[in-house]
Amino acid sequence: MRTRRSLLDLDDLAVEEFAEIFARTTAFERGEIEKRLQGVACVNLFFEPSTRTFTSFNLAELRLGADVVNLSPRDLSYMTKGESLEDTMVTLAAMGVTVVVVRHPEDGFPAKMALHFDGHVINAGDGTHAHPTQALLDLYTMLEEFGSLRGRTVVVVGDVLHSRVAHSLIVGLHRLDAQAILVGPEALVPTSYERDGVRVERDLSAILPSADAVLLLRIQRERFTQMPISDDEYVARYRLDAARLGLLRESAIVMHPGPYNRGIELDESVLRFPGWRYSRQVLHGLGVRMAVLDLLVTGT
Ligand code: CP
Image 1 (cartoon, rainbow, N blue to C red):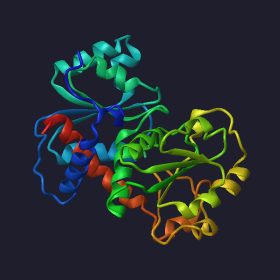
Image 2: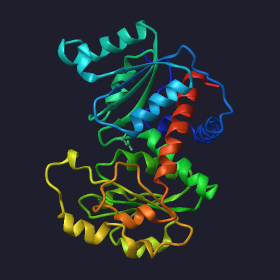
Image 3: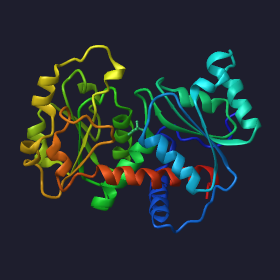
């Protein structure tokens, strides 16, 4: 019963819709658009912890004038009373819920929900698969800096294999004609990622001088049992620190989707670096999520 548009990954958006979302983001951030989701019922359903995505979706819905329900997974009859996912989604639609924002540890869980829902499902991060709104806000942050990403080099460092953020960002960078360079040990960045517009490298220090933007990743320890390299080796080879910051161009920016682990993928000098854009990313998360909600629901 899938009749309305969902956002499960960036593949769901036409390339011109990226520009549309970014234009709406700018308009929302400038306060130029009225509350357009008055009376639209939104349910936020997070099966995994979240600070940034959960809070910004909540604020985005409220600022758009929507009716917001934050449903704890433990309160779902689906979790304890044998109700199927299909029946859960039919029930939510029957009471007029229009949008479900979901985070779940299983790859593809939002897609399963969307199959049974006569409304819009927005993927707020599923397993290692995708995190489309994070990728959109990362792209918007880079566009704010560079105007266009065509021909720009974006270096993504760390645990790409388990990162839904990286997986969605790679799709987005390709759509916007940027070059992605993935850097990390083979166990976290397999050579199999290489394709048109995506390169894999092992030596971070060698690659930093060519970067327009660097996106650092957290090691997703909750998604595997044994760390493939020691923390000491990881820090020695891949941590961004003062010495490695010195290899960057003056115009380069450094980003992190958060949460970041001080001392592992970055040290304190990164937080003082003039090109550190983490707060811009978080800020744009709100505007981008308002824009995505608005585009899906109003379609205009
Ligand atoms: N970047 C991100 O998804 O952060 P949260 O887990 O806090 O939502």
